[in-house]
Image (tube, rainbow, N blue to C red; front, side):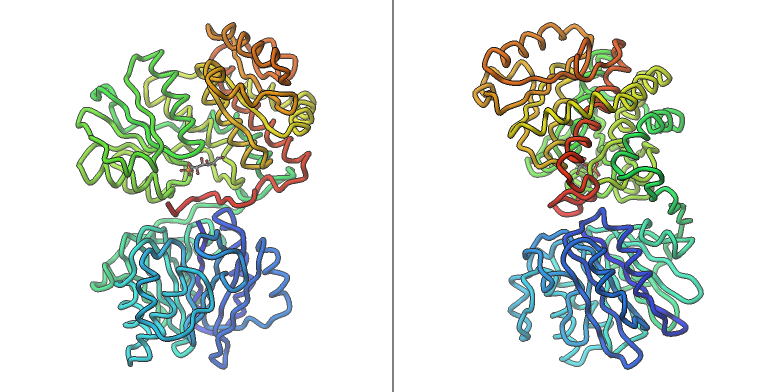
Length: 570
Ligand code: F6R
């Protein structure tokens, strides 16, 4: 969460404000409650401009300023410590120091005792600029004060710092949060991810844990653990800006839902497996949010078809419950972003005990992809909408192929396309949903994780209280909420559990609850009969349903409130 960017103009003063804000816009998926920039002008004065809300507000605020500078830092925020205000936005400035930070400084309260200046924000991050400023006052250089400061920080950080007394220096450090660096003839760049630098530098270097960047006198060095200079390979920055364009679509989310057939084919055609899962007695799948639901869905299919024992678990629980690990188990970490802090933390725990790990990741060169023993990319392409859609189906394809289950890709894509063309029925079902205060998504077997996925999407982008539940479980409690203000979305494909789900639907009807259905013989959103295609088509249907419900409520589907796409804090 939070995106940082920093530019050092190495040969001349340049107005880098627009470039910085464009980079922030490309990272807006990381957080978008406030944003800001700080730059050093020709007179060596430090300017800070911040605004609350989407980056567009910052753009408007900066539209008429002269941003000619030697160095600039920028930030887009997802609030952790301190409410959303201009004061709590980044860059945080103390005296002549400006910093931008992604991560959480866990010992910031303790560190406050070291410094004397009054704090101007409620953030944990301000301690970084305060400490650098403090150590410079004791006589240290900017670089040494920065190095000293980062040794004192507990928690996670990707941080960039500039100092108006050293206008040609830019410093950065990484621990637990991603940071990339790149350069061209006239600039050195740092950012949270490659997307931010996609129009700026053709090559980028991914920093390793505890690396420090020292950019000065026109070039940069990477210091391992802040001490020894080290060479890190650079890679081509292949992310094209075309992929991060809405094209003909109104929103990224609907564009990405429409890309679900392509995501299925790409995941299938580009699948490359480097691990033989037959040698393991158990597959333990670990993930967060929608990626976790994909694991549950894959478990149902794989256990039934392949008789392989699968365990699924939420990463934030797994990592702190002192799990007993097993050499006969393959630990599979599923993540779109490859940066989710809990999934990464869980994977590091498994790696620290020398167990086998497989990452199933969409973002190439992300931390989870790079650190896992084996990695398979899902190849869904860049996903910008905060709610995951096309990556969900690509993760499912990848997990099934990994388990040796073939997928009838043509039939799957055909069934998804039928759903995509069924806008009229999905739209009218969404109209029914938004008339209700509370929603209940239910399903059995493979339809249970799809119900949870539907409920999560509805919550995320329509803010409607919604439960996702196994159909057979509602009589054990949730049915108590049913009355005519509740609408239940019943998901049932043509499988051996269909009749049972229909009975559960009758139980809801008998209590005055309203119903819409997705699946076999549905009057609302009818899905093809074949099992595998119908699973994928039902996923697309819940994505579309959530999308239209949010549009009918006039909400921002791509950037729902309180969320961020890349969850790099625990
Ligand atoms: C839901 C959603 C989130 C993510 C979760 C894990 O629409 O997008 O629940 O699935 O934050 O993210 P990744 O897959 O990047 O680890």
